[in-house]
Image 1 (cartoon, one colour):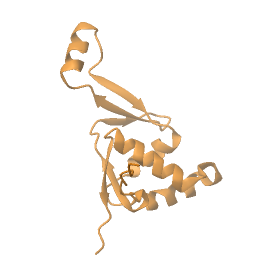
Image 2: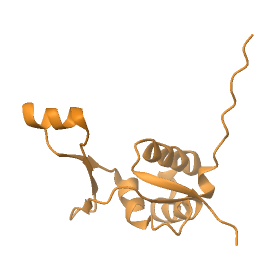
Image 3: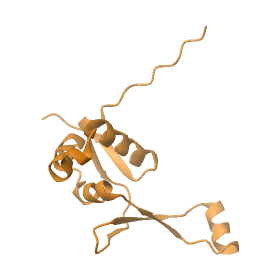
Image 4: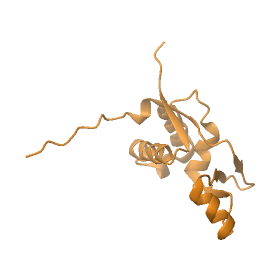
Length: 120
């Protein structure tokens, strides 16, 4: 029987997120919209032939819109989780698994860069 390859477990709470998307905006109601550029050969053809937009708009949910401006490259995910708990209370539960999954998804789409927390 073949053994499964063990992938190293990442503790997202110890990571420090920073924006990987330069172009984003906040609406009057507080919703953050990320403007993701559609680049590459396929997207260039689709833009010319099918009149597809150069940018895709990704609208974040309430918690994402709360977190996005606070990602400054200084605070860890655990620090941000405490701010979420203070803002949303019981509505944010289960907090830590939820926020870890959220940052895992943001990283998989290359919306954020996660750096390990450096110990002084």
